[in-house]
Image (tube, rainbow, N blue to C red):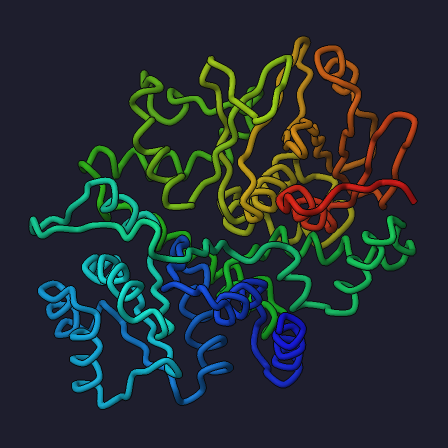
Length: 473
């Protein structure tokens, strides 16, 4: 059965002309599960949730047999759901007003469910009484989860989150592998095959892959920006889209904030990410956002941005590192934008800087750090960094099989100056260097070198508990 699903998925990739997302495999797997529950797809705004479910999955696997309900527009259905929690009654009502037969062979999609939390509660009863009917709901994570914490909605009506009654999938913007897969499939295949063989790419292919990586630093992974660039091959056009999305994110910060002051601070924190990372200490500084501000003043805005998946927060580790990873008590942290394209836009740097060797040499290391934070976070990895004495540090630390693995992110070649100090307090385990260098492994020093364009493959191995890291050739 699993083989059949894989073959079907590959066949679909060949016959359809759309921008592919790696999450399609997750939907195919969910659809074929015997213990399938209603599926909740979380994610920040504009990361492609509706496109994935409605325009790819539904039209491919339920062509002519799916019903799409936009909760922003379907006020009649929303009102009915607010007063009826019998799943069979709800489906009967929808079937009548939409003139659509609902059964186990049809897919029901509820989009923008943050506008109707009653539908989220309804999923519990769909799971209990109509589990055979495939149902997918999507929504902006921050709106839903804040309402989940409040355990109610503004009009006082009861809201209960269907704990244990749903399957969940969290989406992010397009990671580099998704961009590369859509941009140049042959280079993508070569990158994956070389990593699996534990061999460097041919120099010419390595250079091509690096050029595509620099494209991604500029375009980023917001689907609309990627689609615009793939269609026009015009960086100015993709930058125009990023400008609009950046403005939309700022406008969206008025939603479900506690006060106007919180909105202002959230916007200020968001706008400060590039400058925060560019100062001597990359740790987040409240006073850098607002003169005289303290940590507690920015706690709510930072939490809101993190909950919304607008930023990724990395916590500090100190000296001896144990697994599971636990941040140090000093409360230091760093924040990165969730999309490197928006980060590049926020920096104000000229796009031409990404297109020539001289320009790329001017890019500071924070562009590469933000990229790495996005890649690791997109695989569900919690972000940590390590600081030791005498300014020694590793930009990221992950854990595999209870063993901490420090990750050094550098735009150019060079030694891992902090490795010796890290190993003074921790065992001599694997260390990873992510840079513009080709793939390599120093067995004596236990240092794995991977190019930026293969970081996603390493992150997948860390994130998947079933996979062991085998560096032996």
